[in-house]
Amino acid sequence: MMPTSSLARPRHAKNELGRFLRSRREGIKPETLGLPAGGRRRTPGLRRDEVAESAGISVDWYIRLEQGRPVNPSRQTVEAIAAALHLDPVETHHLHALTGMAPPPGEADGTVPSGVGRMIACLNQPAYVTSRLGDVLDWNGPADEIFSFSAVPAPDRNVLAGMFLRPAARKLFGQGWEAEARRMIAEFRPVHDVNAADPRFRLLASRLKTESADFARWWDLHDIKKGGAGQKTLSLPHGRQATFEYVALQILENPALKVAIYYSA
Image 1 (cartoon, rainbow, N blue to C red):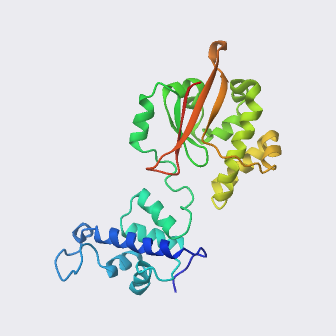
Image 2: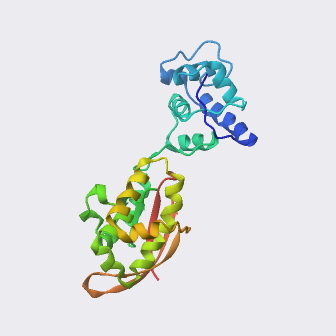
Image 3: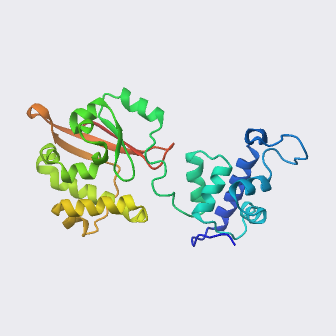
């Protein structure tokens, strides 16, 4: 018996799961996997038994899954099927969604699409890319001038850690530091709770609670806020102050990431 997930899927999702699996199975050329291209193949691509064998599951079980019958695969099985079908990160993310489970912890979080990196490098406005955890993965020159990301060791290059553990953040945000810090906690709280199975989220929250009394106090309030856009007034070098509008946009090529762009208010 195959291990199963406890999450049930609506009927329409089961149908879409079967269609998606079949489309990817039929799109693979057998010869790319070292299989003979000829023979008696009624449809293009791989046969169901070839996918099942590659994924290490029974043929009957895979057929039931592709036909949308009541089978709830485990995460390990979903990942094995994704590997057997040579799915890319976006397709694998979609497969997890169709099977009714969240993407695996840390999935593709550290991979910034090359096109996004080139885009922010071309911007005159400050811009940077963050993961679900808040790790800063890429940034441009204008953003570095304000936030000094390049001066922070990679393990500590996280927007929450920077806000609560770096004295420079209090100077940067001035009188608006508390409001901005509480906003960041309220936006991070729902992301943390949804990803509570990921030990990285628990470790970050535990560290911040231990090292910052402010974080510990506000974290326990369980405030929730939906982010995406707003305004920040920052104290820049040479005594200048500037107010920025900002927007955070999800990256479709890797939905685990967001790009934040600042522009003059």
